[in-house]
Amino acid sequence: MGVQRLTRVAATTGLAAALVAAIGFQALAIGASWGLRYWLAGGAAAVVVGALALVRRRQPAWTAAAGLAVTGLAVVAARLFALPTEPGPALALGSAVLVGTAVRVLAPVPAAVVAGGGLAVVVGAWLAVRPGASGSGVVAVYSLAWLVGVAAGLAARLLDERARAAAERVRRDERRELARELHDVVAHHVTGMVVQAQAANLVARRDAVRATESLAGIESAGGEALRAMRRLVGLLRDAEDGPPASAGPERVEALVDRFRRQGPPVRLRLPEPEPSWPPEITSTVYRVVREALTNVARHAPQARTVTVTVAEEPAGVVVEVSDDGPPAPVAHRGGYGLVGMRERVEALGGTVSAGPGPDGGWSVRAVLPTHDGRSA
Image 1: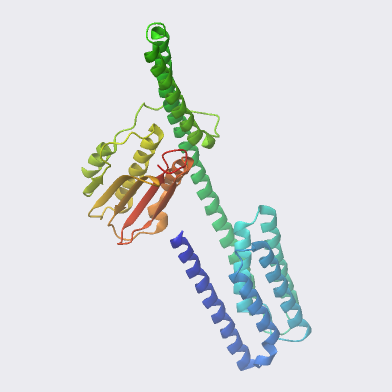
Image 2: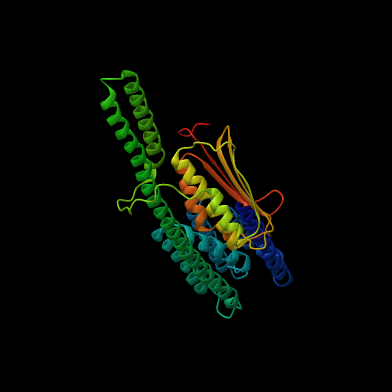
């Protein structure tokens, strides 16, 4: 999230600089020809629309509507009072940003209304050009800016929808895998309960102590099954399911050994002695390590070393995979695999973070509570 916030701040700063440059350029141009006092109204409108463009993400519909209204008023004022033709370059830039953002993020009907409002301003600006005046070039620039804003908004909207669809496919696949895993976990515990119940029935008359022990084992197995179901079943929404998965995942050690044969050296740190975590925790640890190593192989083949750490801490089971590869864009290092990983970890009440490491490279860290979301 820190990288995304930094990117957004940089984009806003760049837009602010572009708006200031456009306002300054227009002020100099009009000051050298008409005289700056003739642009007081137009300059005020440009400042207002520019400010709205900078805060548009909070209320994209209202800021777009207000910006188009101010632009329309600037057009009317320029025509009534024989002022320099509006909308000029500064208004064109601010209006294009407002319209493009609204087309990208709003629902289809409000987005179409905003785009139509921008078109209405374009038509009004052409009608307001005074006969014989040289303002048609200014209006042509605004028309082009409106068209670019709408086109950019539609293109970004399409990319966003494709990204959401891809992320949703990843989530559905993850839910199906979780459903199969839940089947295996519950089947394992229920099978043990049935076996112990049969044993208790056989020895009940001859050895009451052993019968009591079997009943205690049944109670423990039932509790484990219920905890597993509470952790996973809330995420399962799809009616369709695939065949049951295999009984147990490959061990992390084998996964790391296989990666070493085709990638950089890996330092593996596991808790000693081997812990007895619930099956859903063990399989999720494996999944996090697998996805993180896959990202290293795809996006950081120049990495010299990779460190995989699995530890049991007061917060729960902590899995961290870090490499010393060169910096890469967040979108390339994150990918949709991180979506599925986050879906699985958060289903167990855990958290996932991924981003540049403190000493360079990339780091993925997951924390998995081991007891129904409470600390271990």
